[in-house]
Length: 528
Image (tube, rainbow, N blue to C red):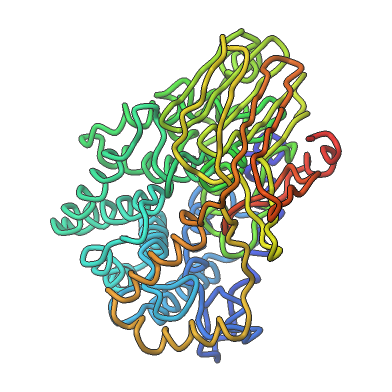
């Protein structure tokens, strides 16, 4: 057994395992026996259950199978717990085979794929510990979810990590049952992912590159690669990991506001399972393992319940894969761009991301997001500037931090100049009226999949990809080097005013942003 001191993933798992186990209803007299959404079955605060949590069967099974289970649990008791999770998953499944995350009758393609994948992993891991009847019954529970993945699709946006989850689930099902329909649909979705992969290596997340979610996408595609090496995924995965290496920061953090979804979490599994084949994966895995131990990156402990289980499962897989990485610290320092100390500049024009690296500084600028700046000196973040915030005469906020394809001007490689329009930020909170409208739609029109998908597309445009531009723009000049400086020249009329002293903000609705890491306690006042 691997001990906590050698395994930062296991330390996080043991710290959070009581929280995971407490999510599930263990009352065998309850109709919700085996359900994991406490807001539904325990508190009664919502009228549906988030199916995502049922996927914990995967992580629990992986701990058990690899001898990492920390408690004196009997085999019978453990299998009874997993069985209750499977049965409850079956009860949650709608007639069309779908599950939901955000509202009743959602028909979530992503969550259905995620739970199907995780339950199939649990079946694979525990097949030797269960009888044939249980094995067949568990497969029967997953079958409607796979049927939904075959017949339905995700059309409200192109979100690569969602599609990768479905590909992994469908191909695991095909491996288990030789279902040609599942294989065919998986290949269609995989082609969609790869056709939209930039030549720079990144996978599309809504409108651009997002390192945090790309690490999750890499997790699922790495699984696909290992079960189907005939699909020629090695080169796309290698390009993905080489791109991601630029966003492991010198202070140990990963990703940030320059990403299309503003996330800064890191899923370790894909890198660990690919470490023996892709050197950059090993380097990144080793470096980020220290980040997890030091909490300089968002860890499992910082994740809330809606996102907890996918990361829990990733950590459980990582905990059993640490032997894949054997590196020394000097190799890591030499190979990661942010720690190399090599004078270089790198521009990813499709992503709009410009990297400036010196002997003791590392700067990341996204010109497609109006000139978002991360600037590190001596491994510390000293400048974080997300852009300009403007208030109109009605009190609404807008900013230059909206993802739009922009062409920067480079001046002798010493400065970056970006012209960016100001777009209204979709800052909204729920209220009783909005919930009334949503529930009315859930009971009526959302039962028609075409109407539901049209509404989802509308919500994406309103909350994430849309936004109206105002008659205001900013010309931002960023002087590069160790002593990086930012000069903004805002063009506006008297109806608009600049909101000063706001340098770190998120311009869109994105539930997965803002998770805590230790730097949040020390960098206030040092990121102007």
